[in-house]
Length: 382
Image 1 (tube, rainbow, N blue to C red):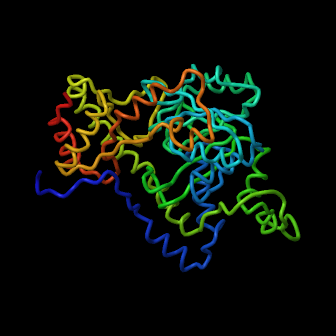
Image 2 (image 1 turned 45 degrees about the vertical axis):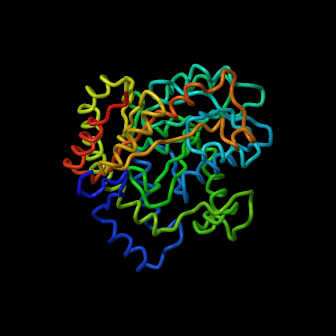
Image 3 (image 1 turned 90 degrees about the vertical axis):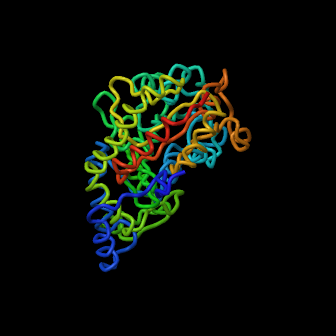
C-alpha cells in the first residue's frame, strides 16, 4: 500500500457556472419548480437527446413511475425488462400492480438479449423496457420491430446513455418514452434528479399533469385555464429550480465533461487490453453503430473469486472499485412481484458475480489513471 491518497470510485465534476447559477436561483427567489433554470435545462436536454418533449423530474425512478402511470398499467399487466438492471426499473411498474417479466442479458454488451424478448410476450404484455447498460445501445432495430408487431409500448431506461447513439440516432429518442438520470454518479448530475423524455405528442399534456400532482396547474400558470383542478392521478415529481440551476451548468459543460471521460475510458481500454487477454478477463464490447458516452468502464473477471480478489487488491493499492447489479429475478422482491421468462437468466447470474467497475469521472487525472492501470495490471486472478 502506498501513501498516496485513495482514488475514489466517483467524484462529481464542478462545472464552471455551477455555483454562480445556484446563487442566482436562490437570490431570485424562484426556487420552486418550472422556473427559469428549469426551462433552460429542459431546452439543453432536448437539444442533446432530440426528444420532442422533456420534463425534468426529481429522479430517474420518478420518471419511470410516470411512464407506468401514463401507460395506464393495471394489476396483472406484464412488462418485459432485463434482470440485469437497477431496482427502479422494476419497482416503477410493480407499484402499479404490473408484473415485471425478467429476461436474460447478452454476454457481450450486458444489454437485454433481443433474441429472447418475443418469446416472452403474452396476451398480458403491455410494454418492453430496455436499459442501455453503460450507455451502449441495445439492438433497437430488433426491439422496435418486436414492439411494433405486438402493439407494445417501448420504454427506454436511459439512465446511463445521455449523449450516446444507435446508428446515428440519440438514445432516448426510440421509445414512446425514455427516462434519464442526473444522479450524482452520472455524467452530468444535480445530486438527485432525472427527466422523462416524450416522443409521443399525445402523452405530453398528460405527462405534465401527472408530474404536477395530477392537476392542470401548469396550464393555469400559462393562462390556458382560469383555475387549476385535480384531473387525474399523479404525484409531486417536479424538481426545485435550484436543482435545475445546477443541472443547467452541468449540461452547458457536457461536451467538456464527455471529452475528459472518453479520454479515461480509452486509456483503460487500450492499456489493459494485453493484461485482460492474458488473464481471461473480458473488456466492454461496443458493437458497430453504437456510440457510447463513457459512462462506466468495467472488467469481467473469470469468476466470483477473481472479482472479489481484484476489488480487495485495488483497495489495498488505494483504488476504490465496485461491483454492480445483482439479478432482479432472484431477489426477494423479484420473486414476489415478478416472474422470470422461460429459460431463466443464466448469463445475468454469472455476469453479476464477475463484474468490476473501475473509477471513471471527469476530474480523474492522467496520473490517477496510470495508478489504476498499474494496480489492475499487478493483479493475477489465477
